Image 1 (cartoon, rainbow, N blue to C red):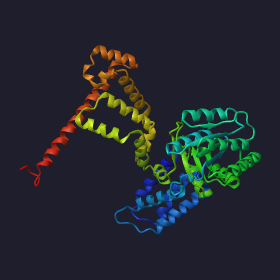
Image 2 (cartoon, rainbow, N blue to C red):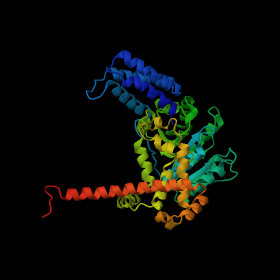
Image 3 (cartoon, rainbow, N blue to C red):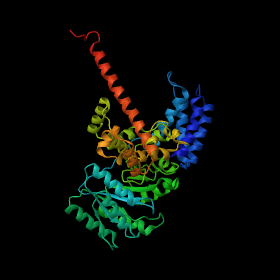
Length: 447
């Protein structure tokens, strides 16, 4: 996500961090590199120029805090301006009425159908009762795709096969929602070109009929500066309330995200960061700015972990570790919880400095090793997982053969696990010793 932009900004910051004194000359030189990085990321020219001017003005008028180096202070200013550029705060959906309506609009191939299902899944988890509505009557198999996505995510879908009147479909969907207590309708509309005026007018009539609380423009993050023209055109016709950026996990240069809010005045509300249903998240400007500047996004990582790991399980696991009762069954559960967090690349990318650490790293090898570990433990019986000491040569050969790896790999994994178990036992003993010592501390001596 924004790898190229992030790398170039990091290079520019090396010069900024070396500043011992803020002057117009050295600030101008340093910000010139930042400006080039923004333009190479396909940020709108006017947006990039205004951004640099604001940072420069604030830098030269800034009083230097004694405890902070001047260069670091300018980097802080750049971070704050990036947050402002991206929208300053998360803009959630504003849904009212029963049912509420959300209109998903955008160009061909921008990811509207997939985003509709992802948004429905998110609203379902928030306690709403969404209904997906197939309003794309032009693209072949569009209805079938929406139906399958709805089934995969446990979402009801209103489909009218062979329908050629979008307004009639909308009326029937509204009646269906009221009859079945669905409080949020998500209309997956047909993709269209900016210049396709008849189709744009069809959307205008649909908007007038359903009176949506939210009209969301779905944009491919790789669109770059053209995203601004697309957004302006749709906004003039439909008065969009916000946008969804898709494919932010790809090689998008970042121009769309950094230009959209500044030019249109409409917030980015959600971001698609992968192909899986769960790879869809509210857009937080401050977190995104931190990712772009290589500072990581620990808050998002914690939220991902909270979804994957329940508090009860975490406390039970902590107790087992403390008592030295951590088994291969617990280890297997940990591996599966890690998988639920997402690929290693996305996890490390959320850590401060993670993007830099990823360069040149062979994560495929690590993920392959984790998959082998999972396969090895799954090939064991429950008794073998709880008591690995019973694994003799014959059992080890059976497990290795059943999981498709060598006995050597199995032995390596078991040795690592034994070392980890021993370390946990030692930590438990150390905690007990510290507890006894604190109990005999002055003022708490036994009588």
